[in-house]
Image 1 (tube, helix red, strand yellow):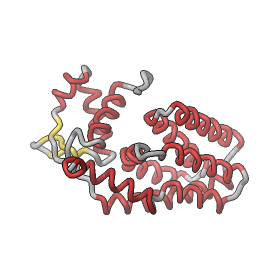
Image 2 (spheres, helix red, strand yellow):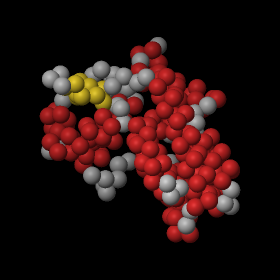
Image 3 (tube, helix red, strand yellow):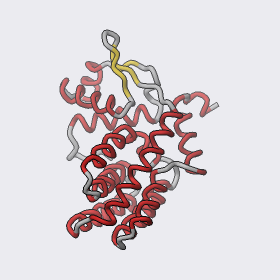
Image 4 (cartoon, one colour):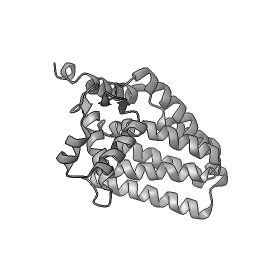
Length: 227
């Protein structure tokens, strides 16, 4: 379900992101901004903003004089980005466990409660947004401005694929359990435990990684997934 509180650009971005992630828009397919505006009944500005957001996340490329196209997913680069993201988030967790204020801890608990409500409702879209807020609380609680900026920048690149992860069976509920472990470690002021919990939460490995790659492969070549 799409929340009415989201802007036209964000709703359009979400729709296009879902279409790309789920293979309804194929890699290399051209996007027509004017057609998108007509289809979603929005003006040029939301279309332009949505495309800019998709370019920032790496899902769309803009080629001068040729147009806007759905990007091709590079699995190897994606794996590398998730590895770096896991280390950045682990560092944020370690510092947050040492530096978080009472107000920030209350905010983190509130973010966890909203994740729990979304999971209980089975709403993966809402969980996706509350999960984003949850992680941002931890970035800010690190009280390291440079780390905050780097974590946010890479998270922006990985957002669509983190959304795709939530579509893997039972992933939302396992993600919630991991969130609880992260909060418990930060509440306890245990930097090592917080770092470990966040790194493992982000790092795609084992069976979870295999499931995720299978989803990406199906996205890259939907015909082979059905045949």
